[in-house]
Length: 496
Ligand code: NAD
Image 1 (cartoon, rainbow, N blue to C red):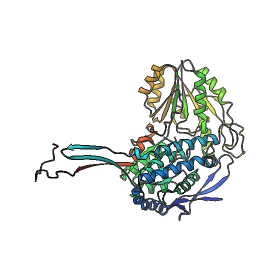
Image 2 (cartoon, rainbow, N blue to C red):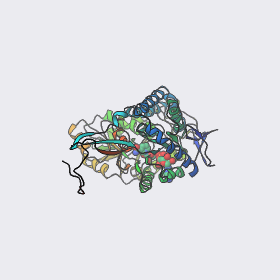
Image 3 (cartoon, protein in one colour):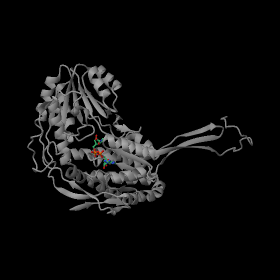
């Protein structure tokens, strides 16, 4: 049985903690490794590695940093199949989906390869007589990235490429459920020539996170996970004076207007509802069917979802297992609760026959129709292959539901009416909006982030928000010619 260790100073580090957690293959139920769970001393050792490497990395020329970024990009692109296989083995998502995850992370690496341009400051000549001003953006120091189980490679890559390219050093605290991708990435960085200590991995749970939030050496925290933990991380990190962005949970609604292409909408609802077994923060979990499309739309969605093959992600299937047995059972309990509360089970995934080992954590696609807003399947983030359909009378009813929801990560509208689409993206209180696009994940050069309880802080991930988040501005006012200022003058300087 393999032990999954920390990574510091360019090599694996076992730490001193005796605590470990089992890592399972969700498609077989087998325990495949034990991940180290850091104690405070382990966390301090990893943070110290990042702190010690900062001064030299910050001094490294932009040209050299960029060359390392390009080398990392090439290695990742050449070997992405390996990383995808690791993701499938610990997360369970099917291979094609894991490849998609790596590709979206790779796009952020490619964005970060342009860092010399992104870090350019401004210069103003003769702002006052013979006085010039320029601005620069400087790195913060060691920064922490704390990531969730559902994207063990992509979510860390939303942050660390830009952080490193901008001259910071990084401590990545991955999810303890699928921690191996982080070590694979650490080894790849070493191969790309990144100096030891610039990218470090701290394995663990709350104890590791708390040290990252409290340790004064850590200057910024990028967190992604569930809303209660995001709120906690934001509050504790900012109260310690750190810069924090904490992305939380989601409940993404898809509105289908009567004029929409219902085949397109049904394909989109199924792809976005059941891809990655619904374990995506941008999964569609609620379809708002605007009268009178409900019956026809539910028919089309159910017909399609019934053809999904659930099974071991290494085989030729569409949807893998859920991440743990506990999570599988929790999602199944939501289906029971919805049924008891009066929702119609249009498709039941609880009795699925999966193409995989009997001990895998299986749950097939499930569609609950006639869901009401007070039911727990509507109010809670389920994070599984359960699509709820709420019937609404009008566009305004649909909009009111979305805007009243405490989450605001992603949403979509399906319509052929440009005016309705324009109204929707103007009026909806959600951070990422799709028009006839069900999972509107922005490209790397735009920023990713939700509103309300889906994000604490004011910076989104990647894009120019990331450049801003991982640097701080400095304005320098200079006078080299004619330095006299007319002798002593205690008044506040006025520009002439
Ligand atoms: P989680 O909140 O359980 O865990 C996230 C991270 O926090 C992990 O590294 C975990 O070790 C750590 N953690 C867990 N409990 C903690 C505690 N009590 N104190 C300190 N740290 C703790 O989330 P998860 O189950 O791994 O991931 C799924 C959640 O992430 C969903 O809610 C999903 O919507 C959300 N998510 C959001 C986005 C987004 O962009 N908004 C993206 C991906 C996932």
